[in-house]
Image (tube, rainbow, N blue to C red; front, side, top):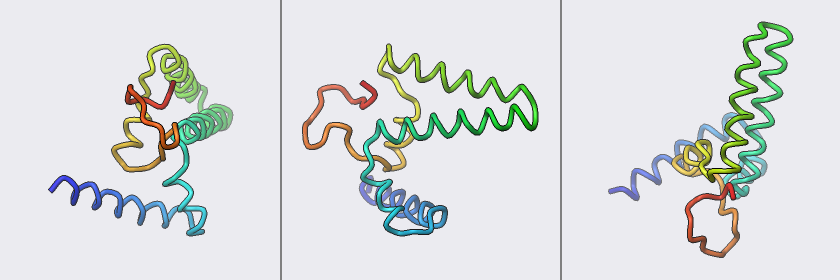
Amino acid sequence: MEHRQKSGLVKAWTQIRNCIVTFPALAARYVYMKMHLLIRRFAGTFILVSLLLAHYHSPNWLWLTAFVGFNLLQSSFTNFCPLEIVLKKVGVGGSCCGNEKRSDSSCCS
């Protein structure tokens, strides 16, 4: 039963992703992209978007920049990455270690 739910989530995410990214070859890359690259991409995007919003809308958007920076800093010390947990549950992102098995569950190290 759990396998069916997971495959259903993967199918739903694939449909959403294909609607957002129109090129199927480009959309397929996100499934196999390494986790640490996805985390860096998300962080960079959020920082740039929050800086643009702070410049054009309200300086309060800089709090989002500070939040992303704080999460990056704390994950370097604690090896706990909230975005990684979300991406794993959605079924996006390949292993950060190739075919090797890791003893811990995080790719942020």
